[in-house]
Picture 1: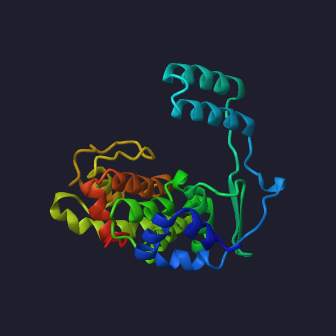
Picture 2 (picture 1 turned 45 degrees about the vertical axis):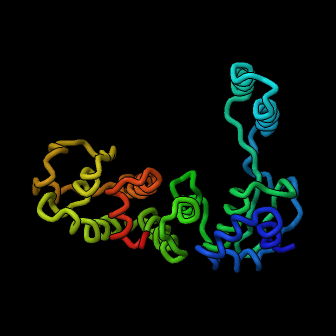
Length: 258
């Protein structure tokens, strides 16, 4: 079975939205095979039975069979007993262009996540929404009416990868070059003032320079830290989720939005 069949059979509204906004994603789904689930695919499982128990109590709550107080009491017991827990719901084999799902009908977010690995040929670090990756832009394009296309999502992840793989200073320079014209003489053309201007205070440096003095030329001497350059992208996606004007304009200047 091809992945496109799951989209069309179980998520017709999502399919329509993809056809309109990110059509190339469905072309990929039409060329990805869904293979049967195997136990050895569950590489991220950690106390998965705890999540099964929580799902049970969630069902009772959603059905009005228990109160929120009862739900909290029971789920707190589970977390206290098991601590950290996770459950592998899907897996993607990028080179083989195959996916597998724990459930016959995967949740739409699991479906998109695994197909996305193949479509964009990216690992979790740059694709997953959990790490502030391109998956966030993907859903913003579908559900928040941002004009974001396939190429812009790829550009976003490409810059993240470049920063992670050791060229973070080049990425920081590119950020400054793109975003500084929005400020003009209000700030110096340096990475940290670009960040501070949004209200975000990067944690990778000690603030020997007044963080409210964005015209101080000493900022030009401060070398951007790799962690701060990477966190720039996470803050950007968070800003877009909250329709923050600064991050919207930065995204447009960097080529992530139309």
